[in-house]
Image (cartoon, rainbow over all chains, first blue to last red; front, side):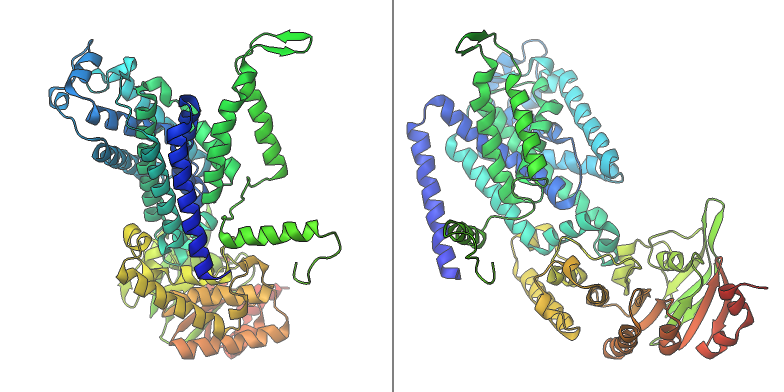
Length: 357
Length: 251
């Protein structure tokens, strides 16, 4: 396939996607639109975790912590003075923060930066560890963040959380964020820096011997990942419009790991596809939690049944495709056209395989 | 070029390398031999910063590099290959060599992600260089294959040119002829001399194939149980009584 064709295909796909967004925004009912937009938020989060898990090979379980930092930062920056006073009825808010209020986009960016900064601070000590030790350390740091948020009343309103956040996470905002994140990841992984990350994942000792500053690469990767985790957290907060510390427990991290592993760690397109699959399935399977009429038997509502089914689905994927849906491959026009050729050939009958099948 | 003074490495009670003193001049090819477990690879790991020595110092071009991290040592101009081939398994042949060029590109996160002009230029140069290196060992045709898909001998050659891609002046080769047949070993000797001349290198190599060591080295050091038991020209080493005892045992 030549370059010109690919450019046209890409443009076409972009236009088609914009149309889909316009249609979704105009005609989807509130619930469907919410799920659709949630896909975008999860995409940002999954892509950011994939940078650590899939590309740099760092097993971090601290994602929820950085999301919390992002969500709280953004919320506190965008809420109006009246709204803050309404929320902080037990302990008054810090005076300098009370009058601080700014538009959503700069706040979102600052939320990412603050989260990245915290990520940077945590990375320096935590990244001296590796593998499971790193996982436990990051899990611990995420818990520390959550406990700090719960207990620092004047800044975060503690366990009551923040309510009535302006719902700035509109269809266009979240999908623009998802697109920017995906584009950033693609560019990053094509660059020499991305190559160094893959080298670190592949063989640290060899990478170091080639002059790659392994520690620096890891810290940078962790910081960038925290940035996008913060942005994702902020988007989530402004979508649900209520945040509290209990939202950012390990379960949230687990959901994102699920997306990354299911899509194939080390594949950007894998994360993108899996964000759709997981988010939509989680909602679509909701009927399982409710009472069901199975012809003669009426089952009582079993909350959590959908997670059981979901786990079975996950196990099936892991058994039949050990490396996730996409492995570490990427979807491209070339790979699509090759897959198309294979399908056509198979449809054309067995035994007619081309010489270079 | 490279000098060590009283280099010692202890792992708990075991002294893997003790009082290791070497001095290598520019453009020499120097061998390091010894029975299994003599501490040869440990010596390499000390020089390249994988281990911090328990005692002693390492000087490269009269600069003390003892405490440097491996990547800084690579940056200083010492590159290496590994005994049990450490290619990047999930990368293509071409990308493996490109990682070797990393030092030449070395741009920050943003410059490389957004393809700023300075970075683009260096990346382009690196790609040219990688292409040339691959061509020089006849692997350009396999550039898009996974590194692990190459035959064994080709993997060895790829690892050597990946090391060359970092632009070293001192090249450490850890058993480059391991697993090669006599014909391949002969070609390898020729190749080592070749790259020494072409890239103005100094080579320090560990090898078990006596034919290779004797054929290619100007001088050599012999280690046994971490001790340097002999040094000198190949012909002297061959007649050295202690070396023969170390290799064949004593009656």
